[in-house]
Image (cartoon, rainbow, N blue to C red):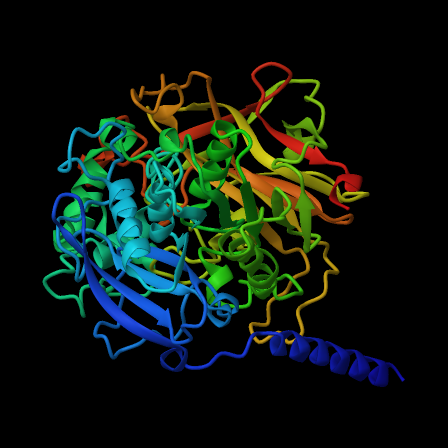
Length: 626
């Protein structure tokens, strides 16, 4: 009898999956539906940018345009060679748009000189003063004036670096640009995106991405992108053996990455990085905006949330929307979004977003000329695994509360009655691994990986609640306050907020990896902070050895429900390798550190009514999510 019920349930779920997959739109081959054209569009300074245009064969009606500007190539090149798919999803491809792809200035088939995250110029004195905003304006102006059967309305979209170019296109936008969707856009490469988080250098990611992408793509467009030749698959051992940042550059990168010097030498928040901060320029925006990102985006979670927040704060009355799904970087466009790592979301989140959010956004604004008709924030509540439609982000119905570190590894809503500290020895020769498996670069699933292995180490402090008696939903940023001391003069402090599953939590079915979910410690949010920046990112200061100092920083937003029977855990450590480079724990330019500069230190994390450590959270009432 039980077997029959189980078989029936499996059959039912199979039918649901089949029905979901069948809901995907049927598409003709691109070459049957569209004709491809190639243009070199002149910019105001005379530089010409390669642009591929896919025009619908059906000329009986007018179409909106969808533009993507990219540093990653508009391949395949040649008027008779076609992309496999067009646009952000098949839903839009089948509806019919004029799809436009452009190599940005200095990349692949476009003329000019490329610059990583080219700074915006608010004031321009003539045609020689160009930036990504003017290149977008000039491109759109040419397109609407020269392409037949366009309806004069343009949408723009892009994921990751193309998301940055979308953000730039929204600034001083061409009047024809009516809708823009920056997706996982770069916001600030020092404070929280890609290469540095609160001053800490994301080593493994920088090595892989920069080697692949900081190259002369005009000289050899077909083979410009390639990964480093890693001599071993285990990044932990590999980078540890190579040693310092100078040695990694010499031995692995072969001194072949020009931008590496900028990444390492500009180790404070100086004018170089400030000029590349997108946020101050997100003002007077005219297009409707749909900012899209993933709660587990290992690259540009910061940029996504900050783009939405700045657009919302500086453009009152604008059509400004946020979508956050349970995704890694760009997952909403690359697979069904039903799972990430060991965590399953029990639905096809990507397809739902494409059909019910992205398509209506562009269709209503570019074709029907109507407001987008979306909720202000369409956000996925992890833990409970549900989409929520909210009228603000963070939600208005939250209560600010504080989780305090307590003696004996406890967490509580009230400060402890007595003061004290926990301590550990941080040894750069044996840093805490960033993932519990073999990998040589930053993995897409690290942001929700199991933390049980880390919890067993003596250099990781663990604080936990009891099993929760009812659901606890956190919605918004997490404000960290640490009171610490170190016997060194600099140190990193990594804070991780974790959802601990009950011991009887069922394993997935099927379970090819044989993962045990009982007691699983799912990372919900984790961020490092380089301690010398505790007072200023511009002017770092050494720690006075043995003296208590305060560190305060904000971790990116979460929308996560810790279910009843689960526990909320906080782990604190001083290394996260090779995701983050090793801190010598000595106040110095880390890019110039020699092997002898790395030293063991003793760290203390304090708790108490005064000088205690805590995390400020925003707790959402259940009624607000209905």
